[in-house]
Length: 195
Image (cartoon, rainbow, N blue to C red; front, top):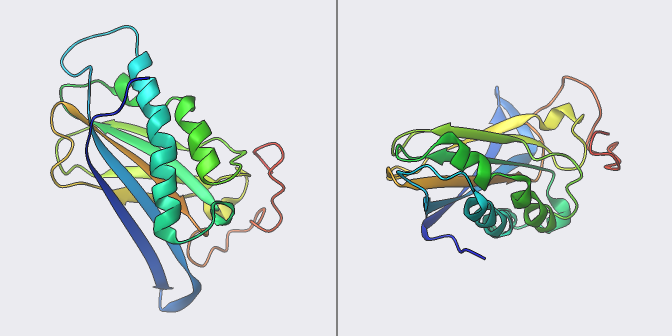
């Protein structure tokens, strides 16, 4: 199995204490773990993207575990997740798609215990310091509207032209003060990934 050549890992935790002057209790918390890796296919076309899919599989568990640890929760306490990749200028969008291939999902699901729902995903190309939105959705039930969310991340010196920035985000809650109705976290069964 090919190993990711990781230049750095950045972990960020966001904690929202108030929203529109209202207390958020308990605070909503999101964590993102971001790996800046060498793009082994930078500057050239290759039909077979297996190497990038293997790297994604390696990063799914690593970054998911870092998020859970940063939040200080057990894997079972994770409520939502998402993934995103930002490719430097010498790469192509399909490189991000290969990294975020479903093989990244299995170890990520193990890191957050279960994960019946699809992992929301975003792919983008951009320069160093470019913002990347990591979409978030409930890990077990896609119809839990309170968990439709996102977390913006950036690394000031990444991605370089021959790098890929790979991010995973995990939360221990939904949006601050959710009130648009629908299925709640407590009502979710997590059997079909939808409800």
